[in-house]
Image 1 (spheres, helix red, strand yellow):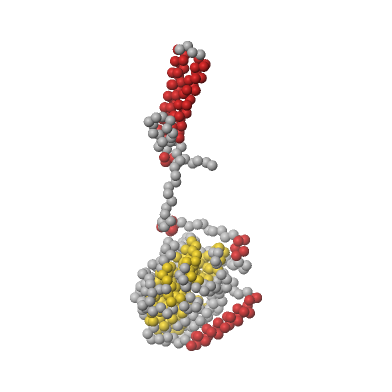
Image 2 (tube, rainbow, N blue to C red; image 1 turned 90 degrees about the horizontal axis):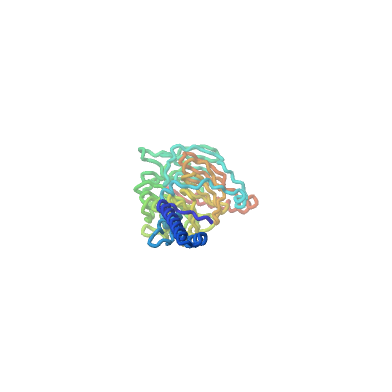
Length: 464
C-alpha cells in the first residue's frame, strides 16, 4: 500500500536545514577524526575505518530525526517538522448534519438501469416515451397544490390558473367547467372527482372556499366554507369530502346535509398539502408543510386528536398513496430537504422502510395490478421512477419533462398514468399493464360487481 503524506503538516525549510546541518557535522567529524589519527601515527586505513564506523550511527540518527521526527539529537524537538508526515483524517460530520447546498445542488448522474435486471423484475414491455403530450398553459408551479384528477368515466379534470377544464380521454373533447371571478390573486388550488363513478367534482379555491359542481348539468351545486386560506388538497370518502388548507386544518364536509362541517381536524402547524383516504374508508392520511404525517380515524370528531402523528420526514409531505394490494400500507414522499419515500403501517404507525430517491418527491401512484410504485420528482432531472415493491429495486425511469413533475393521476382502466409538470405540459405514459387475458374472467367478474355497486351507490347518494 502507498502512504500519501499530508503536506499541510510539513516544514520543508527546517527539514532541509536539519539535513544539511547533520550532513555537514558528520563530514566535519569524520575529517577531524581522520586528521587526529594521522597525526598520532596510527595506521591510516585502519583509523579511517574506525572513524567511519563511529560516526555512522550519529549520522543516521540525525537523518532519521530530520526525516521521520525521531529524537536523534538531544534537545531538538523536531517531531513537528517532519518531511513525511502522516496524520489522521478530519473527523466525519455528525449523522444529523444537513448540508443545504449539497441537497439543492448535488445530484447523481442519470442512473443506468440494467436492462437485464429490469427484465427480471417485469415481464412486460414498458415504453420509454409518452403516448401523448398535451399543452397545459398557466399550470401553476406550486408544490403545495393538487390540480389533477381522473374519474371513472375517463374524464380528466385539470385546473389552469382560474379555470377548470375537462378533457374526455375517449373522444378528445375539451370542456370548460368553470372560471373563478376575481383579481390576479384568485385561482383554483385543488380539484378532486367524487368516487364510484359520480359526475360531481370538488374545486378548492385560493379564497378558502370549496365548491361542488355537477358536470353533466354544468352548474355549481353548493359552496362550502370552513377555511380562512386557500384549499390546497381534497379527498373523497363516499359522501364525506375532506379539505386541507393553508390555515393548517382539515375539514370534513358531509355533502348530503346543509350543515356540512362535521369535523375540523387540528394536527398540523402549517399548510396541509396532501390528503388521501384509505381504500377501506377507515383512515385519513394528511401531510403538511410542517413535515408531519397525521393518520386520522374516520369517526374522528373536532375534539379528537390524530391516531398517529409521525415526524420522520425532514421536509413537506405532499405525496401520499395507499396500497391497493396490502391493507394499511401507506407510501409517503418528502420534499427537497428529505427526498425519501417511506412506507408505513397505517394501523400501528410503524415505519416499515425508507429509501432516498435523490430528489424532491412530488407525487406517488401505485400500480393497481402489480406491486409496483411510480414516483415523480423535481430538481435535478424531473423524472418518473418505477419501483418494485417491497425490494424497491428501480425498474425504469421516464424522462421528458423539463420542470418538476408536480401531479400524477391514473386512468380508470389502470394502464395509463398522466403527469403534469411546471413546464406546462401533460404527458401520458403507458406504464401499468392491464390484467392478463388468462385472468380476465375472474377479474372481469370482480370489476363488473364493482361497477354494479358503484352505480347503486351513485343512485342512492344525494348531493344538495
